[in-house]
Amino acid sequence: MSYWFDENHTENVKFSIKIKKQLYSEKSKYQEIDILDSYEFGRILVIDGCVMVTEKDEFIYHEMIVHVPMNVNPKIKNVLLIGAGDGGALRELAKYKTVENIDMVEIDEQVVNVAKEYLPTMATSFDDPRLNLFFEDGLKFVRKKENYYDLIIVDSTDPFGPGESLFTKEFYKNCFTALNDEGILTNQHDSIFYSTVDKTLRKSYATLNTIFPNFKLFSANIPTYPSGLWLFGFSSKKFDPIKDFNEEYWKSLNFKTKYYNRNIHKGSFYLPNYVKELIEDV
Image 1 (cartoon, rainbow, N blue to C red):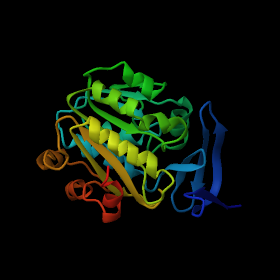
Image 2 (tube, helix red, strand yellow):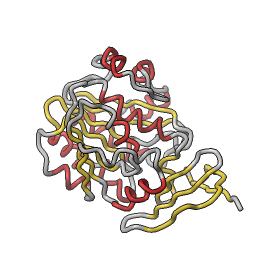
Image 3 (tube, rainbow, N blue to C red):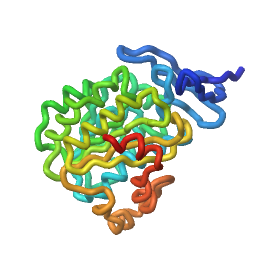
Image 4 (spheres, helix red, strand yellow):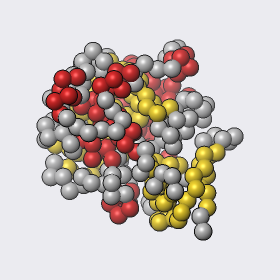
């Protein structure tokens, strides 16, 4: 018998998906993890009652958080992934043969184990020889590094629970220190269409804008995420994500992508007026 999964986007808004069956449900040391099989979106990873990824639209999120920075600086070789336990960002990153080292830090080992078993289209690269996998707190891990990474990708949960520390001033300053002089940081910034996380995210924008010489927000349309319009942050010590976008390099790679392309890259940094107005005082 099928049933409906409801996610509360706000106290007044629910998002519902019709479910075939529940494939997995267990509480780890850190959070409640569920895998649901749906009619429309395929398999869904749910953490603490919130949709993290679905098989149908995960490519949008993962392509944007990885390909945007990788095509601003083609010389990226040493990368730190924080979070990303479903494997989708790692899958996209592993496509770049120029990358020599990938350190991945996921606080919850159970997320990776579940992804390997139930999300095979995402968890394709955990056996990549360039990968060093650490199960620990990303905030503590990045404190140990200085002038080390070309790129840090923070693929975290929303700014509460285990992911809350990854939106703090301390964490961003540590990331700045861990990056080399050409370093880039990309991270997910949720949505500010609803006011539930508005203050946290506006504070996050202000902090990044203060720490990094180059900071810009970019967006993507992701159907299963609250409001549909999802924001990401691009922060760099050297590069501008539009002026330094290397279109010829992207063309030479000849990658098959479902969402990302050169026009999307440039256009994603042009934000709707309501977003600009909400953050302009920042």
